[in-house]
Length: 612
Ligand code: F6R
Image 1 (cartoon, rainbow, N blue to C red):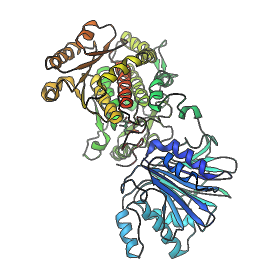
Image 2 (image 1 turned 135 degrees about the vertical axis):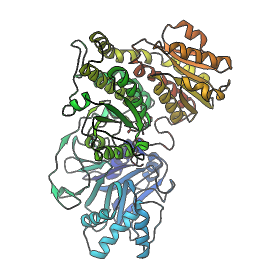
Image 3 (image 1 turned 90 degrees about the vertical axis):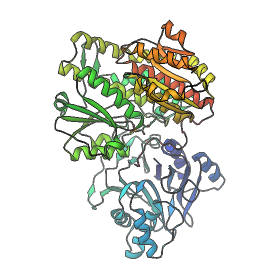
Image 4 (image 1 turned 60 degrees about the horizontal axis):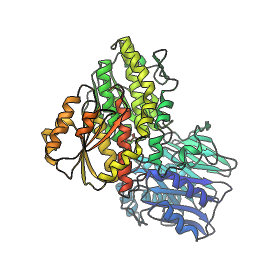
């Protein structure tokens, strides 16, 4: 949610910031801006719209500097317009601020500053911070670092902020609480960004900002301090990220590239962990708490959105394979209930970004109640990976398309590994069944490859249905969360209204929607629910509803009854979610493209949801 990039060094800052903002645009894209130190003080250029619009606009303005801050916005306070876009200036024009996060007490701070005679131009929470910093400078003569620190002591909320001041034109101050920030250290240059993607082009040496930490970066170098003014020496890490991982590499969209990467990303996820020949699973990320998990009396999965769907699939797997009571809950609901966490419970949180605000808050709550929290994350070093007791990375690589695809199959792969490991520890599966599942799991990447060969066929089906207004997605068992995921993908990418249901619920309401203009998509596999789902399909057909079916390749009967059929390769039903979902991702992708949508940056969405 919002992306920040800042630079200080020898280069012209404008192209560095523009390129960085393009890389961060997946985090928010309703307006963009930058501030630089110009010949006569701070210059701010900002406007509603995409980064490319800002870039075109500033092109002929002939601006340059060696220091600057930039921002791409996902609006929280105030509609997306030129005034509410960041950076925000203090009324005296001496302080410029970009901010990712939310200032929860901004109303009271605003009232306090209004009473002191300050005025505001925007409706944002961020402008309050710019004014507050300027006020500390004016009233107490503080330098920039101290003024920022004092202002942040007054702030309740979450932030990554980058601040410039006319009094110190060679200094950049950044600070973090609850929103990630990375500092890249080059030769005589520093970059700061919300994630590493704007940095890798210039340097692979980075320092991750800690919680409640402030960095002062100037021509004298980098100083890190916490908000209590205690210094720490920077721990420089080497980025494990290649530029190609964040480029489209010939694909028309990141989403399509990421869908096609799945055979590789699932392989990467299993590599070194699954040893199918030896029938073993090694999970380096869960050691100290492995026994807790082995003895767990209940497992609770917490997540939001697509990751929550992975949690539902996992809850079915854990009950089926490990005989552990398991539930999956929205983190945003869980934290506002009064949930019971007992000794012997293990909570697994699932998050691609590792920054989702509700999931982070749910972790705090579980920890406060004495629970053990394990994380399944994609982004290495993210807040969730740090806040959980232990965890397993999905190793799916950067996911730039806003709609999650490869991160989801990565989550399913990790959750399946954990479930099978646990089943082995708890002896809840026969050795024969366990070994077969391990061998089949090893085959998943290949099965996904086979689904990808159907891309043209899936596109042709999407062409037939591209203009529908509503769709139903249905499945049973572990295919029910996949139906939910298919519906979510379709609505976020194409803006077509779609609902996911367990097909057994169809007669309890959704069947009222069935008519020729509202197609139903069924997931129907030979998994013990086959006859039931088949009957549901017939019931829809009997009411003249069009039916798209995803089933096993070669299922002639199913193909016969469907208006459109997508056959995917057979695999054990326990593993089928990782395979069937790929067909749904391709379907949603083509529906989005055929409807002229920006599938990588769908309206109103942002990749990492760092506000509640
Ligand atoms: C949908 C999607 C979102 C995320 C959700 C949680 O395609 O990507 O629903 O799954 O916002 O995000 P993470 O996994 O980063 O916690």
